[in-house]
Length: 591
Image (cartoon, rainbow, N blue to C red; front, top):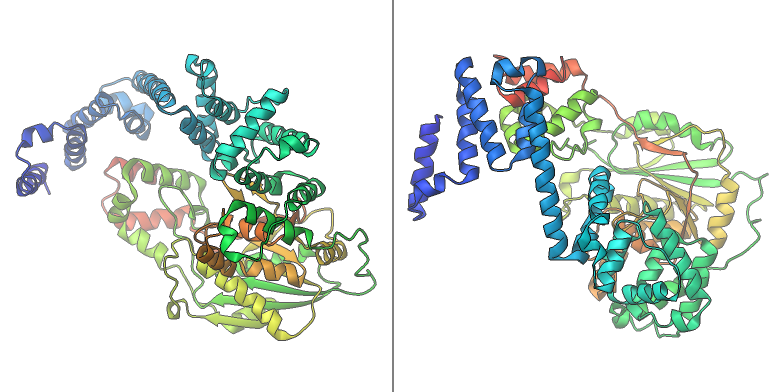
């Protein structure tokens, strides 16, 4: 469709919606850029196409769409840039950089003035996904006159924590932090005391040491502040110090049997303390002797992606001396994670060529996912149809003839409001654990593992007897350790513990449902990846230890598309070869 036709359609739509200032509307930046892009893409004459490119590029610069303008430069071949555009590559790219930097500084200062506290929280959030940008902005803030002249105590503390410049010097800082914890919501505190902010974590530990030795300061914390300290301490304190903190809180006796009061922070704090402290802290670990093989149940649950490839690495679990049974709980369709063009999630499980993955994500950022889906239907249809079915015989050929297995058709079950697949995941985790319970066999340990989880080969072997003794005597789960990202977090791909501990682990969905119904203070209102599991373990009093540093690997992959296969699929959508800048971006990454 021509640009003129597009203009006519748009004009008719505007008149239908009684927008009569059409010419003024057409001068809006987004509209001018839209039609300039359409003219460029539709132009077939090479000499005219150069002019259309230049027109679009200058419009983007004029209206401060700097990143997109810079992307246009970088998408062109450098050696042909002047011939194709009539402009100097380095000159235009550097101008874009300067314009971008200038705009960046202006926006940063403006946002900082708007709300220093909220700005600091979002700056700290940036650290996880964009560490380079975080460092740039932190440097700007440190040298900002607005930062140095801040008056609000809680905003000043927040900003100093956000850029990791807070130091606990004396009583003034202790008073500041007590007031800060009493005032600030836990979801903001977890951002500021994230695990990767090791300087802030050190401050938190020093602060807690001071409070433990000073009852007067400790009990100046309100109930919300105490709950927040428990959450952060669960991830950041040693086991002994965490227990000591809960013992101090437990001294404030409350009637936790009044379930309707669990919406209040003081009752939740006491509930966590009671559930954790009721477990005997036995010093001796002699429940299981090394001369007797352990009875271990392996619960494999979830979609069977790359399970054969992953299983080959499970030999490094060193289970050959123990009595092991497999319980499989899965879906008939293998399934896969669709490779998101914007975030790149799932791309490394489909494409076997790193240069293409980077170009794929760049195309998503520059042109949008919908544009890609429309332009390359054959390519995306092939990806969508790559899922396969799994049978009981398939599972037996890998895990052995004597497995217990449940294979369900996903289409037979309805999981409402489950965009993140958390309901499906915990349904299968619980179902696998129920298979173990119904078997009526007695097990010393239960392992939960995803089918595609890789186990790394390490020099140090796993001491399963030590794990069994600790987990059965102290109510400890072994997994990747609890951490704080923007929220309380635990990995959900591998875990091992006693049958009672793994019952706590597998009933997460039920705990969340109860917590939501009774409005437990601080608990997630829905099933949220990693976060709900972490809070479920915390509230049930389960301690978490690192399974073995370096032992747990990533996800296995199978059937990755080679660069030749990717190129072949794209060219089926482009029988006349690449024409648009998006086409060239993707194709050039493969040739």
